[in-house]
Length: 215
Picture 1 (tube, rainbow, N blue to C red):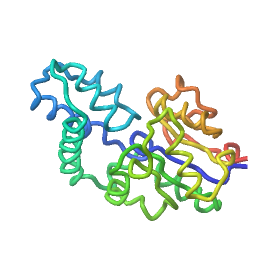
Picture 2: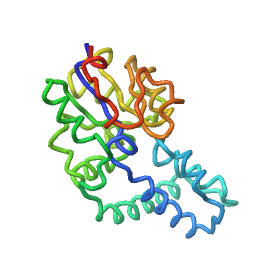
Picture 3: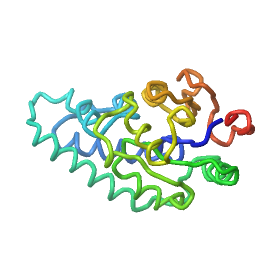
């Protein structure tokens, strides 16, 4: 039986995709990169900040040192954090809060497993922090999905074996990470039917039978 549910953050509990895109777009413009677009931004879903930066720099004619890349990633993050100031409970995705409340009522532990170092700040802004038991984020890990590290850290923080954990994800890399970590998965989001999750739902509001998933 599932004893813990680990949620990806962006695209599962909240959507900040547009803020990420605008922050990367601003950085790209400062670097003279004019070709960065929404298709590039889709490729950044579910991967680390540094991996996302590499996607931006693919269209640059300049080579950057590791130190310069670190500075660029930090600069983008400052733009993004500034944009987060307007984030609130209205940005919580359908069914997210209700799902966390249902799981808490059933005695199921919950965590977030996200590549974002801003996960604690975002969860505080949208009011979901009190409904989560643990957070595993970019501050805890060094490997990006599809490596399962962020989910394994979440399971460890919850004090659970990965085999009794379920991962909720909206990206292929996350579903692959769950499988690599020995966990079942629930695929949600626009591509939920194509991600290969153990279970599927358009979003959390469509999940009506948690007893079936948790058994």
